[in-house]
Image 1 (cartoon, rainbow, N blue to C red):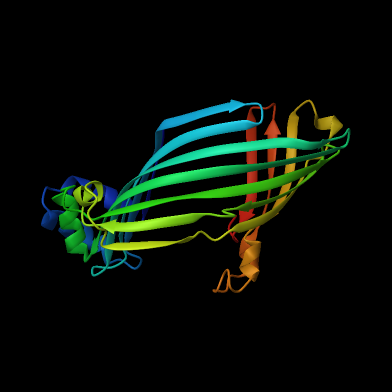
Image 2: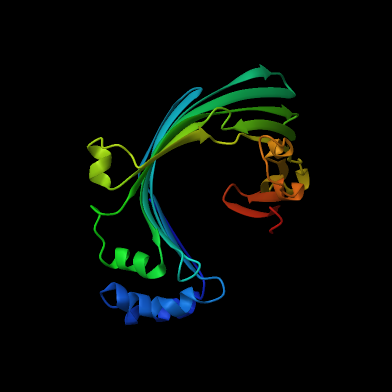
Amino acid sequence: SRLSAKIEGPTMELLNSIPKLKSGGSEVLNVLTPFITASNGLTITGDVQGPLAFGWMDRNIGIGVFNRTFSSLSAPNMTTSYFNLGEEIALYCSYGRVVLDKPHHVVTVGGTAKGFLQFILSQNGSASQVVDSIADFNIKEIPVIFSRGFGIDVGAQYILYNVVSFGISIRDLLSPAFYSLHGNLKDLFTGKAAQDVRYGFLKPNLALGLCYSPNIPWLSNYITRWDFMIDYYNLLDFIPFITPYFRNPILNLSVGTELTIHNVLRFRIGLNEGYL
């Protein structure tokens, strides 16, 4: 399992206030109000990957099943707040093969079929309503969002002299997704009509990548591999009817390097979406 948590806001002040928390929504709200009314509000997220993590591989095919439990509390101000608690199960089936294998030229292609189920207990409203809902948590009364979908990813890679490699991939080539809102878990599992139903397709993500891995004989006793990489993704952003909003093209560029020492230590540095 993998556990991660993040707090966006006055983190240390919030941690120091934990001993003051008492049962009851009003007491919790009194402690959280100063942090919510701060300039950027308060956001708390948690994520647990696993314990379901099954994988099987044989020659050119691989299958994996994974689960994730996640939660988030976002309160940008006192009148607008959101709380989500969810569970996600994902299934992947991948296939790849070498279509050209010459001494200095290698071409591989592959694809992945994937599907997911996601259940989210979701509550929104004013900060007091959301905090009361959390403090007096009743799973039978919280609305449920049920999402499901499947998709296809495909890609290819060309390797030249085992030094330069070029890749192209398109994620979510065909990925329909379905969303339904239910009053509570009982309504969902008893087949009661959903309060809201939507469907659509995830936006495809076309990406190109180039990697240069030089052979440095005088460093080979220490450095196992040194990669210099550059990627450009979301190429379809330049097509207006696929991406109606403007996005600065430089944000789709990623560059970086990774140094591997004795196949044990790895050092990475790079630039992604304008951030180092």
